[in-house]
Length: 202
Image (cartoon, rainbow, N blue to C red; front, side, top):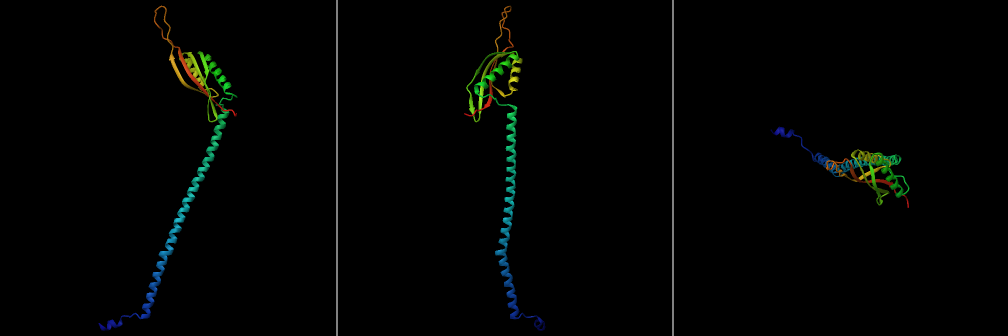
């Protein structure tokens, strides 16, 4: 047993100091890595992710701006189409626009076989850049005449809108032979017709 203990290598003080120095060096390197390099790498990764997010958002904003230009162009095209189609009354004054509309409605009623009882121009109302021209109409006629009048008005150019319509059957006449009141196909119709024109500069 004694002979085996003698063969075990013994570390000299110089060798021990060398191993201690190597261990200290490794410890210092680990500390530098943990304290300096790891935070720098983490910060670099964070900045890279932030950059990617900013690039993505910038691309989104560029897409939105591109769509905005397309929407503005579409609105301009729609406006031009409306102007070409003549949806708005082109008369110079509200009075002329109202007179034109009354004449058009009168002709539509007569052509349909109805009877125009009265028309009345209502006060013009202004909103934004448009003037609302309103005419109150009273007419009589059967259902076919009324249908033809409404169709003629609502498909007109410039555009005319039917508003606040009131339809009531007319009271029938008494038969002289039977003394009974016979039903009538005639209708009393009241409605408002509305058209629009651009406000003229003062």
